[in-house]
Structure formats: C-alpha cells, structure tokens
Length: 245
Ligand SMILES: [Zn+2]
Image (cartoon, rainbow, N blue to C red; front, side, top):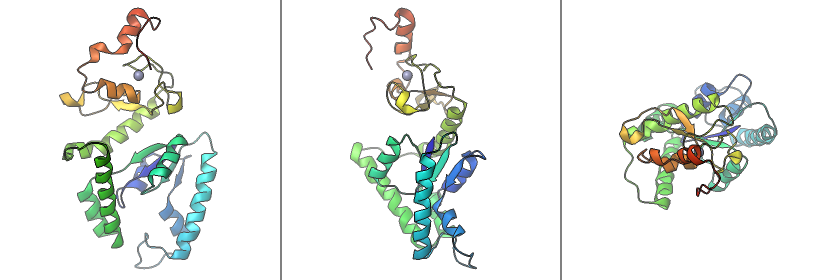
C-alpha cells in the first residue's frame, strides 16, 4: 500500500509517518533526503536548502518513488505537501491511499512561526486558501466546526488502525459484500471507509468498523439502517433482488 501523506507545512506529516510505518516500511521524505545531502549547518533551519541540494534531493526522491512503486510486501509512506490535482489523480490510480494531516489552521500557523523559515507561513496560508476553494467547487458548505476539524486527524488514525486489523473478504455490514483493502477489488471501486456504529449524528465519536465507501455514504446518519441491502440479501438472497451496483 502506498500512502501519500499531504498537508500544510508543520502539520506533523513526518510524525504521522514515523507513528504509522512499521520497521520494514519505506518513508520518502524530501526534507530528510535533502538533509542527508548537505552538512548540518549551525543556525540554519533544516527546512531551508540550497537550489543545488534541492535539485539533487528531488532527483533522489523521484528515483525512490519509482522504485518504491515496484515493491510488494511493505507499505510506502510518501510525504507530498501540496500535490497538484493531476498528480493526486495519478497517485489514486496507482492505488494510493491519500492521507491529509491537518491539525487545524491555528496550530499550523503557530508551529510555522516557531519552527519554520518565514516563507512557510505564506505557504501554509496558501494551503488553507486552496482547501477552501476546493470546497467551493462542490457545494456551499457551512464553516467547519472545531469538533469536525479535530475529527479529521483522529478519524484518519482510527481508520488506519481498522485497516491494519482488517481481513480481506470480510462482509460489509451494510451490503453483505466482501471488503478489500485494495479498492479496485471492491464493488464500488472505492477505498474502505471507517464508520461509526453509533452514528456521529447521534453523538458517536469513534469509528469502530469499516464499510465500503459507497455503503458508508448510503448509510448517512444511520436512520435507514433497517433498510440496508444486507438484510434483504439475508432474507431472499441476491437472486431476484432489485438492488443494483
Ligand atoms: Zn458495502
């Protein structure tokens, strides 16, 4: 599995990788590569690199990505702060799972001020502006609440935990069809989603099971649980069932 870890500067992307990667997994981190290519300098931020070091680090990173994509039997964590939409699409087509690490604008801005070169403040601000624009592309959305922002990070960690514990082929509670880590094997072609048995709309706070991405959306607030296709399937089997995928 390839995890593309995105997010604004100082969001905690490297920390995320260190916490989630197993000892045999691969982490591709541009800053770490660049730091390995230049002598440590007193008083200069580890995130500021010369053009020459950046160019070499970029080439090393690309070679690492190409090789990593050909590996099996280990997870690869690739840190990419702000991939373009086209690149994100390519990662997704390669079967990558996109993780967005975002502890919230306030935390990121104060960390940037304390720990990063000055120009990173602008980069972080730009990241949040782009996120807001991305939201506008779909539908007008109310401002996110603090709880929802907090949920993002906790929820992703919980989803990762559920995915690690998942046995491929386990039946989805909603539709009774098998669930796979490899989204191309799922009936909806989507990655598995972490679901709250005790629906969030009713105060549930921790995702405790996986559902198909589409099934999770269909379940919505959990007020149609009694109509889920799995029950119809258990009653009459799939033959003659009008449910189509
Ligand atoms: Zn399902």
